[in-house]
Picture 1 (cartoon, rainbow over the protein chains, first blue to last red):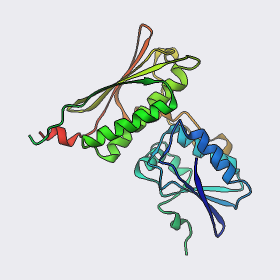
Picture 2: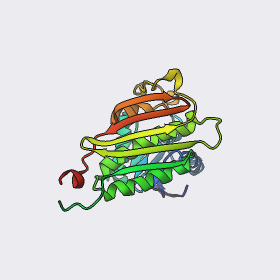
Picture 3: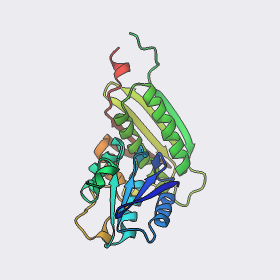
Picture 4: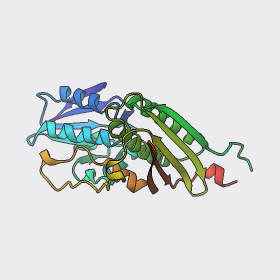
Length: 109
Length: 153
């Protein structure tokens, strides 16, 4: 899965360049992110602004990424589209992740 | 009546694979958008069907070659009615899994990475029924969506 990464202050921003994180793409998503977060900074911000659909396989993959980061690093989410936000809300996973409306909101000035 | 579209009545038959499920959902989303459903409604339909069909790929057709998924969708006044069939393994204990909301009050390592599927299906679908008919699994349910263009007529 194609990712765009950018380091900003203390964080690595990962922009997912895909429309869907579903059962057909969840493993690819997890493997690509795992490669991108190696040796990166403390904070990782996953920008999902291009993702219009996420199912429970995709949700599981996002949880798996958080576990890969371990207790000393932090995964935050940004720019969730409504149907993606709904999956996090219904499963109450929105209480587990820090979710920013926009990636810029993760960097208070 | 300004509406000229025919009543929605779809029958889709496709091979059991993650990619075929994705292609079917993309095709269906476009059709539902043409029928005037909102993006939020389409999102609910797509999510429930994805969870149902992912379960068929992963569980019903586990270790089965050349499985087929059969999806029927009809439009009624109270929403869309779905019948999803396969000829794979029956549901465990012959019934739909409970699908309780996963417990999240735990350490990072213990957070669940799966088990959300039936919870989401039960949350968004109505009148969920499962029947084993001969060698066939049949799941029926309804999703309450507005279908404004059609019903305003």
